[in-house]
Length: 336
Ligand SMILES: Nc1ncnc2c1ncn2[C@@H]1O[C@H](COP(=O)(O)OP(=O)(O)OP(=O)(O)O)[C@@H](O)[C@H]1O
Ligand SMILES: [Mg+2]
Image (cartoon, rainbow, N blue to C red; front, side, top):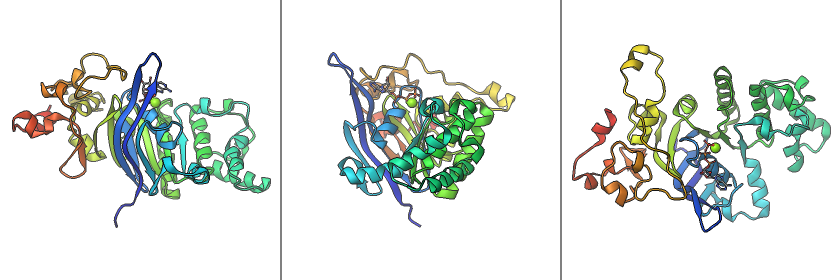
């Protein structure tokens, strides 16, 4: 069966005017699509623009350039009524559930609020029943309904955040580092919960994380971001087995391997230098100042976003034979 595209992002840019004539290019031209029912992971280190991309997609920020097409409709051109309906379809969960839950509201009030705004379950009794159901769905129960956020553990608070996001029966959820602040043991529980809910409710996820170990279990395909750009995008297995971009290779080499023998012999790629500023990004390839494989062309030309052997996208001059004098660097890069 042909996979249906739920979200299409075309050349999305979000630039912030930070005063004194300076522009910060938080997201600078990313393109990808997400299929219905899929989990698409975005990874990259702090400040690379992951949250800004998520917030722009959901409409919390107005895009500087580019398109967001959801269910075949350009989100920027929706009228007020359509936009209201769109808000039901797309929800967000956040890294810090404590900061995103009102400390003075009970769990029941927190989960009810979006339903009240959207006129869902107008009868109070029905609404409460729905709150109880949502609490059950996320592994809590109705006894939790009248408590306040501070009475819960981090993992439980994330479950409340998830129940709230589910209240409007969305199709698509942007999870912005939903497990980064949790203990390792709790991280797995929340990932399992998200996977179960995905199956039960047919949800589609954009799952944002800062390292590749966090998206490994949950993602079908993964995009790697660096300084406002996507540098590589492919299926999870392809990305872990055959990373092509030197940045992806460095990120993977930073994940410890449980086997001490392999771990001892393994070469870790340490990136030189500091992360450049998105106010003055490097010319050509934005990664070149830290790239162990950088060539002359990298400072002169922006690498194109190209598709190599079916569904593996990469933006890197190493894979452009014209730029390397006909030499194919793919094996050199992969065997590092
Ligand atoms: N509202 C804003 N105004 C100005 N600059 C911003 C704003 N929001 C984010 N930025 C800047 O945009 C860049 C990308 O930030 P963003 O929060 O999207 O990164 P991130 O990848 O989510 O990082 P983290 O892993 O730390 O959450 C950073 O340089 C950040 O300082
Ligand atoms: Mg972020």
